[in-house]
Amino acid sequence: MSVVDRLRTLRSAGPREQIPAVFADSAIEAWFGLPPAEVREILEAAPDDALRSSVVSTHVLAFLRGEHVPLMDDVDRASAGAEALRRDPATLALAVLGARVTGQHRTALALLSGGGSRAGARNLFADAASVSGIFLAVQAGITRMLAGRYRAALADFERAKWTRPPAELRFLVRDAHVKSAIIHAVLGDPEDARRELADAAAVERTASWAEHVVDASAGIAAALVDDTDATTRLERVRAIPRPDIGEMWPFYVLALTRIALADPSAGIDGLLANLRAADPPGADGDGLPGAVFDLAEAALALSRGHVAVPRDTLPTADAQAPLNRLLAVALALAAGEPGRARTIALRLAPHTAGLRQAEMWRLTLLALAHRALDEPEAAQRAGDRAHALAHGLPAFDLAVAAPVGPAASAGAMVADWPVLAQAGALTARERELLPLLLEGLPRRDIAQRLFVSENTVKTQISSIYRKFRATSRDDFLSEAHVRGLL
Image 1 (cartoon, rainbow, N blue to C red):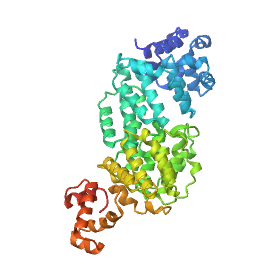
Image 2 (image 1 turned 180 degrees about the vertical axis):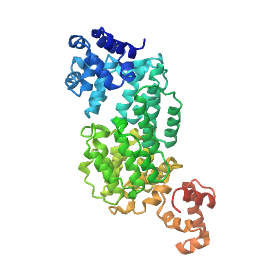
Image 3 (image 1 turned 180 degrees about the horizontal axis):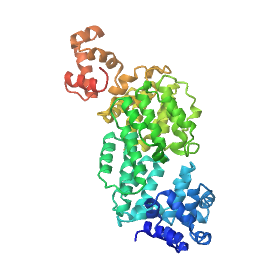
Image 4 (image 1 turned 90 degrees about the horizontal axis):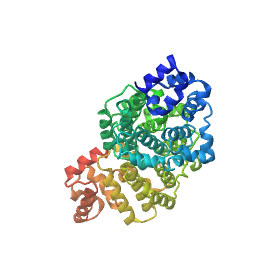
């Protein structure tokens, strides 16, 4: 008899005093096998003295009732109780979830760093059927992605993908693929995100209520990599059932913001304002949930040329959170502080390495900072590296790379942003030549207009072709068309 059937039988036929112990022995299977409302009904059917004898059952019931969870007292005090809970996967996961729901993502990270989660993750390779191991790996990944530790989150999800959980828990593997897809869609490689979504779709579905939550996360990831028009993408995002989005709501906000950055006429501002007013869980805490609305508003303001965005409204203290720090670089550039922008961008490198879009944006902004500081060689190197990463990404992603945009008047270094963003770090002479080349003028005519020799024009055209990864004028024009320069 499955634990679900056994708990239902105990509720209806007894003995009900066994309910807490049976639930605690298979808490993960019971939690995902029964709707949360039924879990509450079953636990409430147990006698109070039996409930008090089971720490897990007591805390789960308090959590479902929306009451104070005594377990969090130990966590807040960092007492011996907090150390003890790390040794029990179900209790640890409950404490981590409790911290996340209240916006305490740094507390949740501290719990995971206690050793139990890492040991459980390592054991996954020895025991691919470890229920507690895969559950804790997925919970660790979700915690880290909400705290802005995206590379570590991807490692957690990767561990979960190597498992073979019981059939009723297969959705955990699917969830690991989907959550990885969200990270790749936001900061990594969109193609990796699409591959993760395809892998997730290949995982056989279960009867768990959690499948709908995974579906909502998949919808967010799919919207983030959707390359259709903004109206279609917006309809796709708004079609995701709100109750199923759960803790992934900050990425829902990012999906809306990305649509607004690509098409200011999409009418996203009101929707974002309504979401903020709804005060979703964790919005007043730390991590991405506590920062995402300010990030969105600052990015949209900068993209529209409002360079006087108050920097003290943007949470930038967390030096390991790529989105926070990337926008801090853009704010510094817009404020005419290229030295500060350069420092932030250089220090951010360890946290964007391996995340293709994030690293491309960092290098592009770094190139702008170097150019503003009259460091042409460093700007060239950063621009070339950014361009190599940008190859094949949609033009819309390149626009998001620098919210400072062409409308920003804080410094001349961003006046030609569309050219820099789309073509790498071009020299001043190459920027003069580029529009003429796009017109299709022959070298002789270009030389006459610029009052230089044809040989000079030939050399400069070759340099532009190299930066566009083109070997001929046709290749160049084709690439320019793809990137929206024509």
